[in-house]
Structures are given as C-alpha cells and as structure tokens.
Image 1 (tube, rainbow, N blue to C red):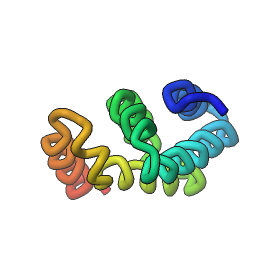
Image 2: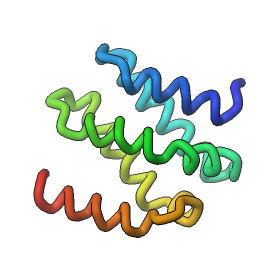
Image 3: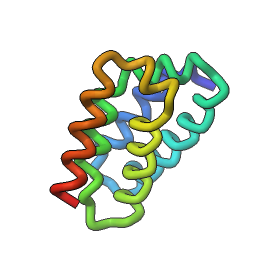
Length: 108
C-alpha cells in the first residue's frame, strides 16, 4: 500500500473531481485514513502537512446539495478539528478551530 503522503495526494485529486463517484470515493478513503491515524503517528503527520489543502476542499463540499458528498465532508472536518493529536501537530490550529466554529454558527 502507498505511503500516507501519497494516499493523501490521491485523496486530494478525488476530492477535486467534479464527479460524484470520485468525490464520494475520496471521502470514504479519507475517513479510512483518518481511522488509521488513531494508531499510526505517521498518518497524523501526513494529515497535518496537508491540512490546509484538505480543509479547503472539505469546506467547499459542506454546502453540497448531495448528502453523499456533504455528510462525509462534515465527518472528515469534525475529525480534523477535534482529533487531539492532529490539533497538536498543526501550528495555529486553535485559531483555525475558532474560525470554523464562527463559520458554522453563521452559515449553516
């Protein structure tokens, strides 16, 4: 199996896709990688290094009318902003969390 950094780049490609199937597969794969990261520190490191690009892709899909896209996007976002190891690995993460909370309070 590919290393975590390679997997995340593939996931970013799928999440950037315009097709529902590829986006859906991308989110399922990201959720699986996030589950793996609870037991593998190298996965947390890879996620923290690609946090901003992933966050941008996820945020753009939160308002998708298709529940098959929006629901896993929200689940992935929740993992990324609340997982203690990931939060600790990202410089400036607490300010990002506050900005996301503000976004959700006033936009959803």
